[in-house]
Image (cartoon, rainbow, N blue to C red; front, side, top):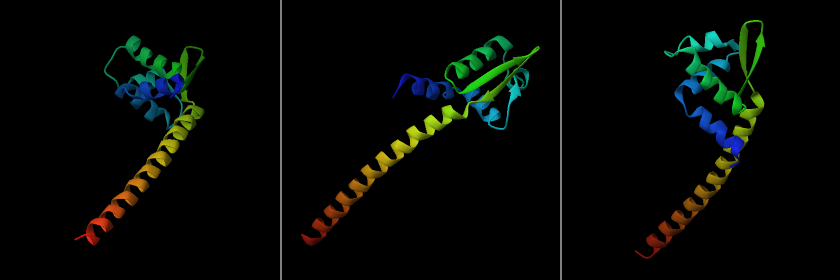
Length: 112
């Protein structure tokens, strides 16, 4: 797994950051809107946003005094591709295991 992808999964491993991403999936939001549901001061909350931004999951833009955050869909496309590849790999492995177990069951049944 490349470092960028690892950082993206790591960033989502925190409940606060995961909640921020869930909220941003509904559309862009200001930092104050994003921070409101979380019981922490703004400086520690901003660190969470920085982790998400450094991982490439969100982007922010400042207009006047308001910083607005939004999702970077391309980052999630990369993560989805990673899951799709793993799903195929594990599906293939489970299919082979099932075939081996069925073969063993037939062998056991015929020897009884």
